[in-house]
Length: 75
Image 1: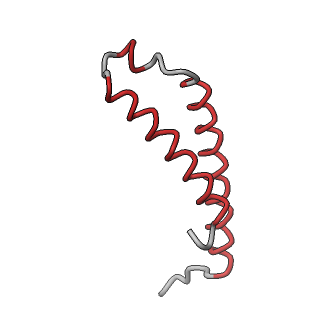
Image 2: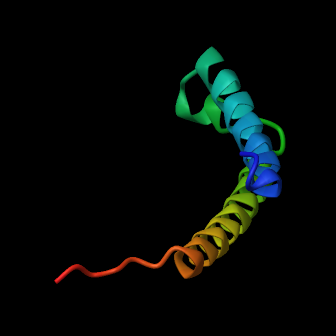
């Protein structure tokens, strides 16, 4: 993501959190065991905040592109 390096960095963090949680969950897929990971709730909340920031950055990026490259309606 050369055009959006900050969002790319944040997504890497979210991806890492998700992969760690899924790796631990795969070891014992019983609900109570899978959700009893240390700091799981805090890590998911952190990932959610980062995803919201990524979404805002993406929306801003796309809006800027729309301004520079407007769509023209053909008659």
